[in-house]
Amino acid sequence: LTLDFEHAPVGNQPTDPTVLVTPKNFKNTKTFRLGTQYMFNDMIAGRLGAYYDESPYSNENFIPETPSFNSYVITAGLGFKFNKLGVDIAGAYAMPQSRQVNNTYYNFVGQAKAKAYYFGLGLSYNAF
Image (cartoon, rainbow, N blue to C red; front, side, top):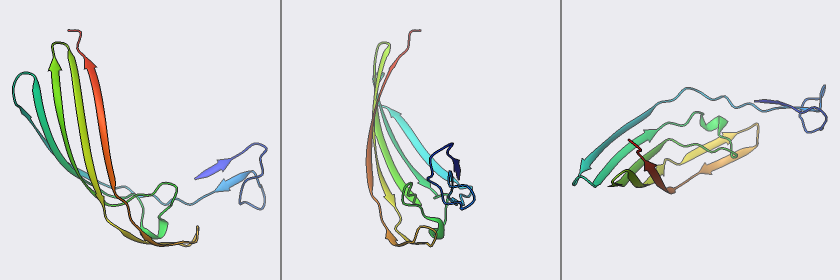
């Protein structure tokens, strides 16, 4: 990642102090997802799912400002339909795998752990 500031001396390049270069070394990854929906009746739908998400960088390139983990996630939700109005609520529990990180560029070494719960609310209106 190269950031070039017009006037502010913030960088790490001795020839141009307005340029900041930070190695990211991202790689292509895959995400595997599986989900299902069950209609309890015409108004209520239940949803379950799971996915596995790979991190885009190795332990040697782990960056603390945007941490990433190989993670298993379980998801669930409910959908409600009231005539033309739809309401969806969802939640997930993420189980990231801990990492032994050793980023020498940032001098960032140790074990990284995480845990996450997240929730969502969606509203929709179908005019047709």
